[in-house]
Image 1 (cartoon, rainbow, N blue to C red):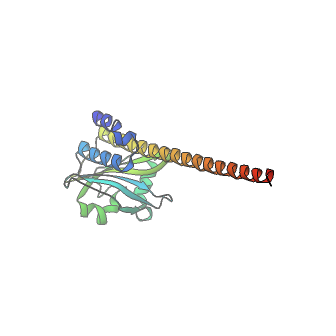
Image 2 (cartoon, rainbow, N blue to C red; image 1 turned 30 degrees about the vertical axis):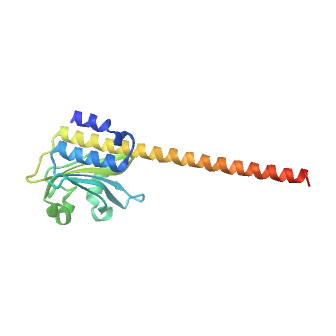
Image 3 (cartoon, rainbow, N blue to C red; image 1 turned 120 degrees about the horizontal axis):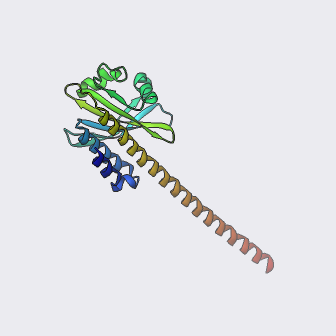
Length: 200
């Protein structure tokens, strides 16, 4: 697990803040390291009304997907647990209070028996969750596995914050460029006006 965290930390997509590629790498690595069928990264919308899947890796299919949404109002216990704890270690997800709401429309259809979910934090706020889904017999999540999930959530946060900084820097550069162009245009107009006055 420690080697995996190191490999992820030095992955070019991760430290460059490339959200799509980095999230794919993290989800795939998390699924393989914890030996689960699926691992997925979900982020909240701006109003915290739902979480959207940015990357889901299915080991059986060796396939990535995204786009699915889960609305907060439909699963209040789960989202309350995310907001009040560091990690949800649902050894038996189908009866655990934090995850049993998903029984009919998510757990049973996907054959999920155990869930390990770690909230993703940025700037003191929850911005999403990384979720590891185990199939087969219910699984007891060890303390090391729970800590690994937390560390992977921190990696997601690192990517998110790096991407946000890059966007802010780019916006600042574009703003400065617009100001420079406007300033040069204004100076040219003033110079032309003065020249016209002098030679009128």
